[in-house]
Amino acid sequence: MINFRLVSATGTKFEGDVYEVILPAQGGAIAVFEDHMPLISAATGGVISVRVKPTDRDDDMKHFAVSGGLLEVDGKNLRFLSDDVTSSDEVSEKEAEAALARAKELVANAGSRAALHEAHRVLAHSTAKLHIARIKRRHHN
Image (cartoon, rainbow, N blue to C red; front, side):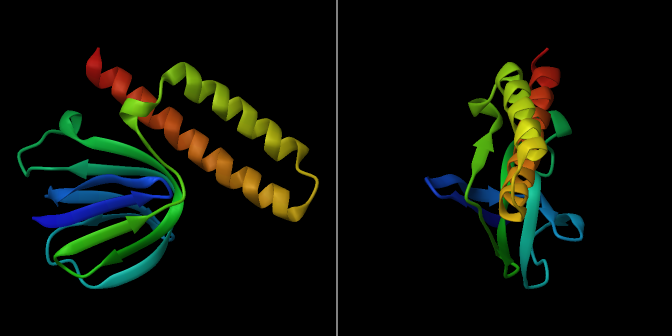
C-alpha cells in the first residue's frame, strides 16, 4: 500500500493508504504503486483514479478531476497538489456539460496568449469533470 494525499487550494480532498493511483502526468497517464521510484513531476489536467484495495474492481475506484498540478512520489507516499480538484460526488453530468460549453466559449473568445492558456486549463478541467460525471452515471445505473 502507498499513502496517497490529494490536496487542492481549499484543503485535502483525499488521504489514505491505497493500492494504486492513476495520474495524468506530462508524458501521459502513469500508475503509481507502493515502492514506485522517487519522482517529482508536473501533471496535466485530467482524471486521477484511485484503487483503494487490490481486489477493488474498476467500478469501485474513486475518481477526481484535476486542473493539473505537481506530484511527488517517494516509494511509500504519493502527494498530488492542484489548484482545483473535483470529486465525482461534487459534480453532475448536466453541470459538467454546461461548464464544458462555457470553457469552449472562453477558448474561442480569448483575447491574449495568457487568456488562451487559462482557457485551455479550464477546458481540460471541465472535460475531466464531465468524464468523471459520466463514469459515476455508468457505475450507478
